[in-house]
Amino acid sequence: MNYNYRYRLNPSDDIRERLAWTVDTCRQVYNHFLHRFNRHDDTSAYSEQKRLPDLKDWWTDLQDVHSKVLQKAVQRLYDNLSTLKARKENGYNVGELKWKAPGEYQSFTYSQSGFKLKNTSGQTRLWLSKIGDIPIMFHRDLPDDATLKTVTVKREPTGTWYAILGVETSDDPPEKPEKVTDAVGIDVGILKHVHDSNGTAVESPDLSDERERLERAQRNLSRKEHGSNNWEEQRKTVARRHADLKRKRRDFLHKLSAYYAREYDLVAVEDLDAKGLVELPGNSRNRAGASWGTFLRMLEYKCEREERTLSP
Image (cartoon, rainbow, N blue to C red; front, side, top):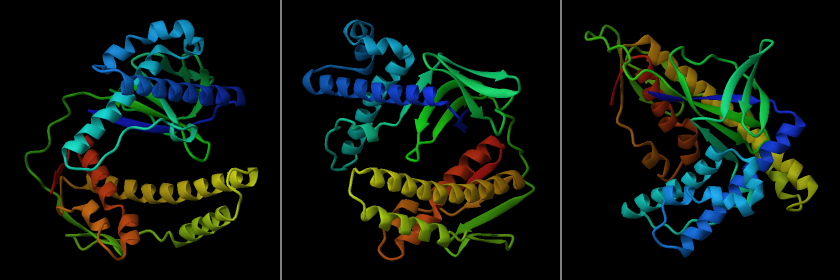
């Protein structure tokens, strides 16, 4: 089974500049191969990745980026193309991929090699090839049987850097119990986020203060001259307000889904079309804020991890 663990990074100023430079270089590589895709037939991710060594002869900056990072930038382009093709086949009206502007490309990925977790004097650090050691807030340990497969470094709109560690655990988890002793049924709502068959009702978190702060920050941003220093500072404030709202909502959903996944052998949920409900007219913001789809996805993978049964 594959899982992702997210940790905050605390890079120095020099490392921060190096990370930002790597992100921008990967963005340019992405745009370069998108330009080639639009002008050449019969290209593929594999054939384009084979061009990278020759590309370094005249694009010397690429020599300062790990080879796997460059390959993943090319793979990212063809993954996006595959997604567009699938949506078009499903009847969606889709256009063409556009070049990534500097603010639209915010991450890069190491795969298989070029990274290592180190413990130096009690401080956990993430070593990245071509970049260096970065202190990491290792607030929770990885599973004992986990193998680190990928590392994605991402810059959030607030300017904060995170590392998403992709790990692989044993393919043969313990079997689920044949006899179910504890079962519960769950129904989701807006005022009460969860009603279960045991009579428990969990209220949705009150995030009205956070929403008010966000709306106030957005109004202040609208009064700034776009692109000015004051606008940029206020944009970061808006990003922090968004991040605060998102963090508190996801913290509630993680704790709630973890509770049901650990306490019950079988969890039955209603067959809910969360996306369809959000698109209905009237009260859509509260339905979107309830994050039913996110809750059900969290519950699904946590039941799998805890060897529990999830039944729609």
